[in-house]
Every structure is written in structure tokens, then in C-alpha cells.
Length: 536
Ligand code: G4P
Image (cartoon, rainbow, N blue to C red; front, side, top):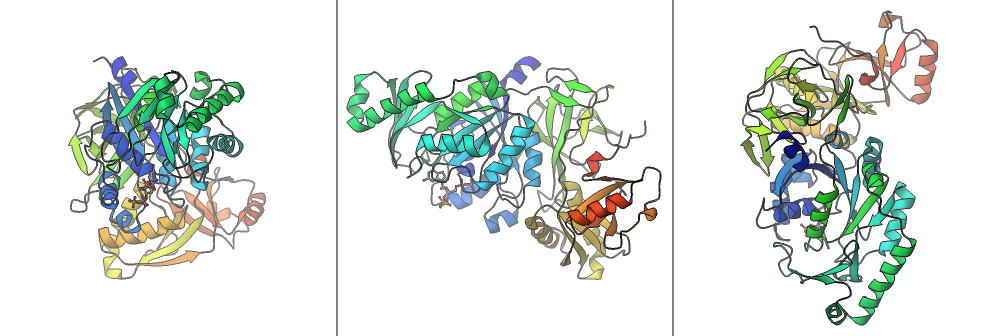
């Protein structure tokens, strides 16, 4: 197959939702329809099945949340699909944001009873900023829930995006019987699920005018559907694919991941509309996915996926060209030439070695510490730098040290690896060789750090929270940072690239300090600093 065909077949997307909306269940059902798994976890076995599919780390099992993002791929009717599974926990969103950078579109999952929830809102905003198409799946329609019209209004009011229902649920609260497809004016009635969604659902399909449906549906249900459709056609938005592409209109689907209700129609319609890998901006211009030059960027790093081997895997999203196992690429940030050996793809806990991969695909490669999150890799001579990668200013800070000073070596190794992974930000405490300062976006990051240092490196931590909420990277503009004035209440630290960072109590004090030091530039994130050019 040609590179163009490979690109055309690819769909890479993330599912965004508030915890418990059913993301794990939907992901599992997509895998079921894609034939990647044959029996979805039954309701009883779900807790275990869930972890088998997308969670890796022990802490996730213990807490029942998904901390790291995983990548799953499967084929469906000629499409090669990559699903980026994003953690939904509100505290641990940095990893999620990065993952969204690797997606070409997003599926926003909403619980029919709960509507738009806090975490959905946050994630939606990131997708909206990126301008990627967002598809809405209203889940759990087998249950009592809100009126679909009210949900449409809520999406518009809270998220500021118009929703266009592609299909419409048939039936009353908790007694949904099928789906009406608006484009074809056809009805699909589903057979009752008797397997708790373990197997695909059988269905009866036909035109809405077919008298059979009048017979199959109760009279009031049938009439209710006709009234709803009339209202939608008259008062609703026009469908406009261009608006969808720009993230201004969200196609809306109804279903129930648990019972498989509406999963297949959603999957098929989604694949038809969702974008193939798109051109990406870089500092040097725009990279077309069908370009011969291989380019990719790192969006996630995970150490110790296999605790026995202490390996470090770098996940990258391919943006253009063909990837071939063992190929030689340039690491933009260090200027080093690297050979990408043993590239891997993942399904559940299984890894397979890939021979080749294409734009939109996610591959994992082993790395000994050269690559960082956000870095670019490319083949050939033409320089490429993907730059629009969000870093998030930490808002919580703590001083940490190993309880047992004999464990200093493991402590250092663990801290360095976890910082490279982006699990936390780590700063050198200028006054001390024994302790470090760590910065995080959410409290859970500290807990993960503590847990992982103990379980993966055997180090117990002593952790003291510090009273700072703001970090500023200092661009010295030729001055020595020691000349900074009025910083008695702040703390000076250095990040892993030896850049000077000021930790400050609050925004008010920050402004005060900034005003008194006009010769310095204060940056909210390190990516605002002038970038270091690697040596040629
Ligand atoms: P998450 O990954 O978004 O956090 O959600 P997850 O899939 O774990 O689903 C959260 C809960 O919602 C689960 O119930 C799951 O069975 C249920 N659920 C998912 N989809 C549907 C649906 O379409 N209809 C209904 N009625 N429920 C759904 P749980 O009680 O937390 O877990 P379990 O006991 O079912 O394993």
C-alpha cells in the first residue's frame, strides 16, 4: 500500500471524559467490534478486565484510576485505528494534555444522567484550543437520564459548541429500544442484551416509514420519535462538515457502552467523518503527513513498564513519512543520531515489535535517557522542530529526600527517571545535595512519586510541602541571577537543564518581584525561554 493510502486509513483519537462516564467500557467495546478482543469483560469481572486492558501500574490497580495514558490499536473495515486512552482523574491532567497533542480528533463521552462534568470541561478546552474535531457520545442511555434536547442545550451553554445529533435514541427513560439515524432516516432496533455486553448486539434495520416499526414500537414511543425528529429538523443546526473539522460543531451520538447499544453505528460513522492524520505546524513550516521524510514527536515517557527490566519507553506519534524498524533518525534537541531499535506497539499488556509504522501511529522505543517529552525526531537532513507542546506551570511544591541516606543512589536514579518521564518536575535545591524540590500540577502527582519511588526503586521518601504556588523561569538577559532584587521570600532552584527558576508564594508577590527586576524576563513555563540550539 502506498504512503498516501496508509495515511488515508489512519484514525488516531483520544476519548475524553469525566471519571466513571464509561471510557474504559467504551474502549473495550470498540476493541470488541474491531475484533481485537473477543469477549468484553463481564460486569462481574470488569474490575480485573479493565486493568488488563488499559492500566499498567500497580498504583492504578490499587486506586482504581487510570494514571498513565495507554495506546491501543486495532483494525476495522480497512481503517487502522489508534486510541489514546487518557486518564480521567482530575488531579493528574498534565499527562492527559500531552496525550491530546498526539490525537487528530477526540471523542467526548458524556453520561446521559450527569451531562457535562468538570473534567470533561477541562479536557474539552484543550481540544478546542487545538482546533481538533470533537465527537460526542452520550453514554448509558440504558439508564434513567436527561432529556436529549436538554443535553444538547447544556453542551452549547457550558462548552460553547453546537451539537448536531447524528442519531437519536428511541424509547423512554431506561427503556431505550434503538437508534434513529438521521442521515438515512432509518431505524435500527437492538435486541435486548442478555450477555452484559460481552458480545456484539444483533439488530433489525429499516426505513423509519416501514410499518413494521410502528408495530414493533409502542404507539407513544413511535409518535414521540416522530415529534422529536420534526423538532430537530426544524429547530436544530444544519450539519456542516467544515465546522466539524474546525471543532465548531460536534456530531452527537447516543448509546450504551455497557450493553453495546449504538456502539457499532457510532464507530462506523465516526470512522467515516474523523480526520486522517493532518499536516502539523513546526518551527520550520508545515509537515505534510505524506512527505517522504519521517518525523515524529515524543508525547509520553514511561520508565519501568516492566518492573523486572527497569526499562524506559518513549512513546512517539509519527507525523510524516514511513517508519522502519532499525531506522536512523536525528534527535532534534540533542543533535544526536539514534537508531530506533525494537519499536513496539501495545495491546492490553502485550507488546509486539513493529516492522513499519505510518503517520498517526504511536510507537514505543527503548531509550536510555536522551529523549524528553515534546522532543522531535526526524530522518534525513532537513531540520524539523515541533514546538507547540504545552507545558504546565507547577502549582504545588515540596522538598523531598530519601529517609535512608544510604539509598541516595537509587533515590537520584529514580528522581531523574521520573522527572524525564514528566511525572513531576524536579529542581535542584541550591543549598543542599541531599534533598530536591519537586513541582507538580496536582496532589496526586506527589502520591504517585512517593509510591513509585518506593515500589520501583526501594526508596522511602521524606516529603515536606513548601508554601509556594508560582514558578518563574528566569531569562537573565546577560545578567547574573544573583543580582535579582527583593526575592527574600522566594526560593531559587535550578531545573534539570540548569535553568534558574524562582519559586514564589503567590501571584501578588510575583508581580512585585517582576516590577523590581526589569532587566530580567520572567517566564511561566520553560518553553517560553529562547530555545537552546543543539551543537551542529
Ligand atoms: P471510566 O473508565 O470512564 O472511569 O468508566 P468505566 O468504563 O470504568 O465505567 C464506570 C461505571 O459505569 C462502571 O460501573 C461501568 O460498568 C458503568 N457503565 C459504563 N457504561 C455504561 C452504560 O452504558 N450503561 C450503564 N448502565 N453503566 C455503564 P461500576 O459499577 O463502577 O463498575 P462495574 O461494577 O460495572 O465494573
